[in-house]
Image 1 (cartoon, rainbow, N blue to C red):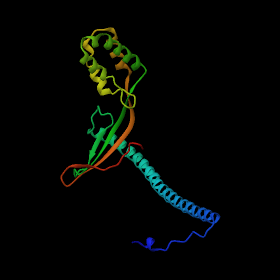
Image 2: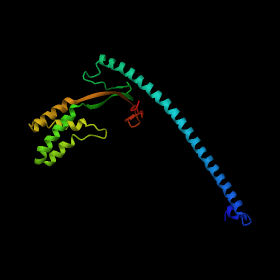
Image 3: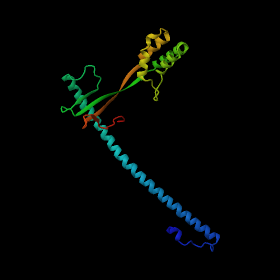
Image 4: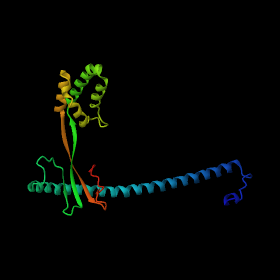
Length: 220
């Protein structure tokens, strides 16, 4: 038996209906006030957490952006030195690694690119699909489905170069004008846009394996 059950119950039998309604109204008022107080306490606490974390996130974002700019400047200068010293390939497109003389620290600059298909790709896909549906599907369903899958778009609505490249490798399979012209337009419509450079910072762990510092520059 807890303390609440041991407390004597108030005798309300002598109260009028009006008095009972007033008591009920006062209790409801108290309950609303308690709920409102709890709501405000929760919202105030939540807003303080958001402001505190957002303030720190903004500071870190600024520091990350400043650090990445510093990396650009330092690694651009290092690339020039590497080229002069002969330690960077002539066909390098901007990505390279530098390693400390002790062999335990390494920084890698990664060239970040994205494929781009211009308006010619729309016509290319139209011609190729027309040929595949009209000719290949009737002869070999498996080949048809395989080749068609290479033109499938990803969640961003773009074709994937690796898949399209496989399709292009089948260029000599048919002499149909639609197929040839479609492949030609696919080749011409493709280009690579440089998004920028990312950086990896690694150190050797106790087992002699490279451990990557978890710095994410993706959204900077």
